[in-house]
Image 1: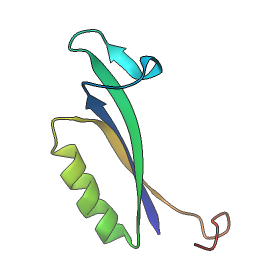
Image 2: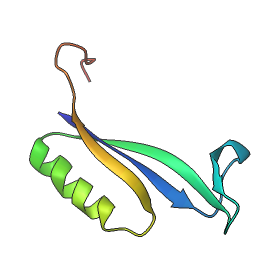
Image 3: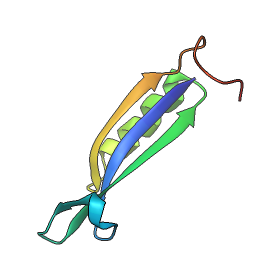
Image 4: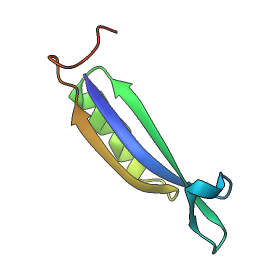
Length: 69
């Protein structure tokens, strides 16, 4: 299993999410679970093609340190 994590720039948010007063721009963190690397890479590529994506990444979920969900 893999996690795809990303930060999105939006025009609304809480004061602690404010990144820039120009707009204004607020940063929102998200993550999604994928069954396999192929699915994670596909989602990652979709995310980085968006104008609103600030940053993104993929990480493999450790079998040793993951819950059984």
